[in-house]
Image (cartoon, rainbow, N blue to C red; front, side, top):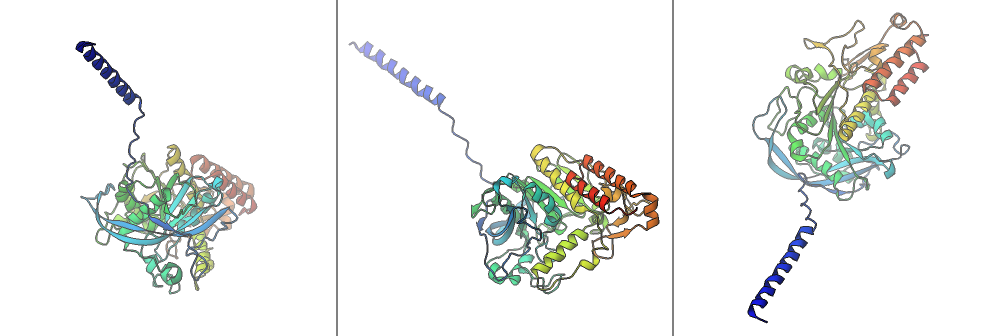
Length: 488
C-alpha cells in the first residue's frame, strides 16, 4: 500500500472517530445545575423532649388536640446564629438593608402541634413567634387561630426566639409564680442557652429553614412543609415587622406573614439600634404580608409617631391591611384562654373570669380565621385578600356612630347588627370594653327577634362575600342569634 493511501486512511479514520466523539457529546444529557447554597442553615434538632419534673411542656395547648387528631411535641434546636447591623440609612418605607455583625451559639426550643395522620396535613405550617411581654412564652395567636388551623389540617410551631422567656425568674408582670423555662422546669430546660435578642431574628429564620429541611430529628414527624406562614401578635408583631423589613430578603425562608396587632413601628434590631417611627412595611417583597389591626392598636399601644395611623400605607401587590372595627388588642376570648393556660401551667395564676363579661367580646378570632385563610390562598394561588377601608379617625381619635361604635374598617355582624358598644379602650389594659345596649335601644333597632336574626344573617353573609368571614363561622354566628336573640 502506498504511503499516500495509508495517509488518506488515517485521515479518514480520525474524522470518523472525531465525529463519533462530537455526536456523543451533543446527545449526552446536560449536567444538572448545582444546588444553590441555602441562605440560612438548618438547626440541629433533638426530641421529642419528654423529661422534666412537670410532665408536660411549657405553654401547653388548652384545646382538645387529641379529639382533633393532633399531637403536641416539644423539640430543642441549636446552632450558630447571626446578629445584624443596618447597612445604610433606614426610612419610613421599610427598606432596611443589613449586614452581619457577629455570630453566637444558641440552643432553644420549639413547640409543635401537628396532625397525627399525614393524610390530614394541608402542607401549611404556621410558625408563631412566642409573645414574651409577660416574660414567658404565650401562644396568643394559636388561641385566636386554632379553629381554622385544626379544621384545615395545618401544623403550628411556636418558637422560643427570645432570651427572657428562657431566663425569667418570676420577675415579669404576671407575678412571682409565673416563671421562665429554666426556673419552671430546670430538669427539662437546663441545657438551653440564648446569646441575646439581637440573634432572635436569625434563630427564627433557622427554625423555618429547619422545618423545610430538618437536620437531626424531624420536628414535623415526616410531614413535608410546603408553605410556611410567619406569625406574631403584639410584641411579636413588632419583631415581625422588623423581620419583614430587614431580615426576610437576607433569608427567604417564609412564604407569607401575618402581623397581628402592631403599632406604628417595629422592634429594635439589636441592643443599640432602634428602628424608625413611624415605619411602614416594605412592599418590594414577593412574600405577601397581611396586617391585622384592632381598634386598640390605632392609638392605644403607641402615641404620636408610634400610633398606627402614622404608618398607614396603601394596599399593594404584597401588602394588605385589615383594620377590624369593634375589636380590641386583647379580648374576652384571649383572656379566657390565658386564664385557663396559666392555671394549668403555674402554681398560682390570676383568675380572670370575673372580668370576662366586661372586656371586649367581639369575635375577633373569627376575623383572624378569615385572615389566615386568605393569606394561605394568597401564597398558594396568588389571589390577594379583599381590601377594606381603614377605621375612620380624626385628630388621634376614632370616629364613632350614635351608639359609640367605630365607623369604617372591616365589619362583621357585631358592628353591622350591634347589640352593644364595643370599644378597644377600657379599664383593663388593652382589653377593651363591652357596654350592652339598654332594652329601649334594642327594641328600637330590632322590633322583633326575626328582625334581629335577619340583620345578623344579612351582615354575616355580606362579610362572607367580602372575604372577611368564613362560612363556617358565619353559620355559628347565625345559629347563636337564633338561639339567643336580645329581643322577643
